[in-house]
Image 1 (cartoon, rainbow, N blue to C red):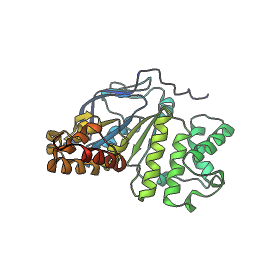
Image 2 (image 1 turned 120 degrees about the vertical axis):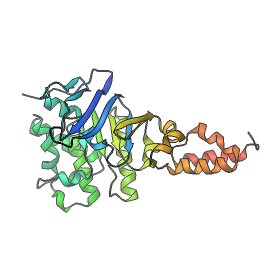
Image 3 (image 1 turned 180 degrees about the horizontal axis):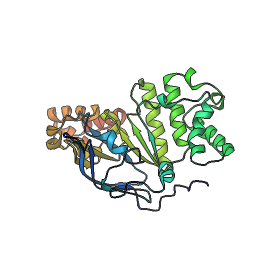
Image 4 (image 1 turned 90 degrees about the horizontal axis):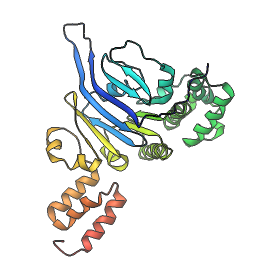
Length: 303
């Protein structure tokens, strides 16, 4: 029986309601990882989840496609309900097709003897016909920047960056509406990081909902539509990148680093009030920042 198509009718991609995550609950020392997490992820946006190591980021996203399940609180992924009071998840295959997970160092998940076999593994296990899965393998391999000649190559003979692209193509071949990335640029050089960010941008442009965990705040500013900050087992703030990175009360209570663009604006504005106007322009990268600096420098002093 073929798995249903993940056509989300809900107005939200993911909704969480009073989610609480506890490990080792039956022991003398239960570990609460996250408490009272309630949030609605809208469709077709790029979300970044940030916070200190150990703040529960990876544990949280592991609940979005059923890798982990809490008995406290409810999650709705697309039109699939994951209810805390229920031990099992209904429509499990559809859940996996709706929400794809790209974990840190996804290339470690490669295990077949050819790139094609690795990419088609997911679709076939979700009941896709082999020939259709092969067509998708070509399509999504090309989408991540590798040509058809890679299909019959061993994934173990590829470079680190190429392996990562193959692993991502395997997730894309499932054709999820929601894609979650855990530290997608970890271990990549600057060129590889730029390529990965372009892949994420392209996916959002195709209508996908993207959730990213990262420690690189420059990425958050450059691409993020919304940012969720986790600290001390809770969501302590959410908003646009500029709302988060200019919230000085919040920043004083966390160890979040500032994006380089924000650091430069802060430094310039401290020395000359003309540069305060740059905050309103909300530049996201160095090129946009340079243009705003030139514009502010031409204005009369004090304006």
